[in-house]
Image (cartoon, rainbow, N blue to C red):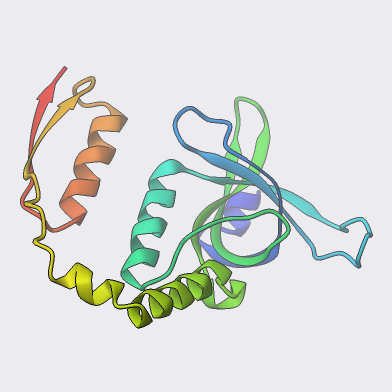
Length: 171
C-alpha cells in the first residue's frame, strides 16, 4: 500500500539517529526522526537505508560540486528517498537516494573551504601545482565472480568516471 501510495522518489526531512554500518556490503542504516524539543522524545521515527552504490554516487557527485558527503547522528537532513518493503521479513524502510546539501548546511564543506583558504594563504596549493601529476593506471585487474553485483558496480563506477579504463576480470 505504501509503495503504491509513494511510487516514485520524494523529499523527506528529519534528524539522523542510530547511524550504523552493519552490512559487509557497505550499506548504511539509520533512522530519520522528527525534530524533538530539546531533551524530548521524537514523535515519529522511520528506518532508513543507504545502499553502497547510492552512497558511492552521492559521494562522487558531492565531490564534483566541491562538497563532502557525510551522514552524522543528530544532524537534520533533507533526503530524496523511496519507499521499500521487504516481504520476506515484513520490513518497511525508506531508501535514501540523494541529499540536499544546502538544507543540511554541509558543515564539512564549510570546513573544507576554510582549509583550502588556509592552505592557499600558506602557498601550499601553489606548490602542489608545480608537482607532476602521476600517470593514471588505465588497466585494472578485477578478481571477483563473473556477472556478480560487485563486478557490475565496479565496472559501472569506472565507466561513470569518463576515463578509458580497461578491466581484466579473473573469476
